[in-house]
Image (cartoon, rainbow, N blue to C red; front, side, top):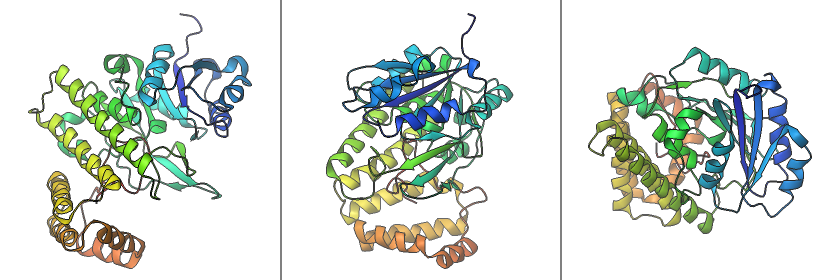
Length: 363
């Protein structure tokens, strides 16, 4: 119909009055025709001044308020209201870079069969003057279930780095409401079995780490850690149910591979709730090894086998400390890369998850 936007920018928010205004402004600043884009904000029952911050933008934003129910219920409400052919999501504490909308639309146009477009984010820690680009993102494209290597290389896309054709989303949603976090993980994992994927190898979103992120945190926080783990398990179950309904049983190799990826991530999240004993952690590292070994060269497989043994000998917490020391010692990393390169196209990101956390990747 006349005036129907081509692109819907969908923001989900909860108690982000200090961020939501900047998020909306980053969309309004896009080098993309305003007449072809709408902004939809779903307020998931905020109790702070989020509503007032959104309403000051007037009719440039469609504001939808609902009772608090979590990310899945917020995205369900937002997609039901979105009118664009393409829906690009944004967490309310993140920012779109000025070329984001244009680059996403151009990529969909160049890949008319693609159902999703994904890209990496730049990360900015609160108080820092600039962000750091995600160097681990590996561009993949096509129908990923037909290419196990690409299915494994697909990195951990965030909500704010994901755009999807509305007609594809309509085949997946509504997401179960118990997926209070990681609803985008479910959307991506299901979506790649419906349609091909296209990726953009440039950071188009600024992901902001501010201490209040729902899933990305480093300090001890048992309540948030348990909520994060429980929500990701719910996302796995939602993905399993969708795949089975769509004719992809757990006996289907690509479906099994996708679910195994998610289970490895779930174990990492579980360990932040309750640390595993040596045997359990060794089994986890071996599971990771079996999953990703097809991507690795022989010498790196041997190196990772030694890491598994180190995990058994040291135990969970000491192994993580040793891993952090190794990663911070650039000469050691460079020496390992020379002696035991992982692969020509190494993927460090191993999860489909909403927000990046240093505890998510096992490798």
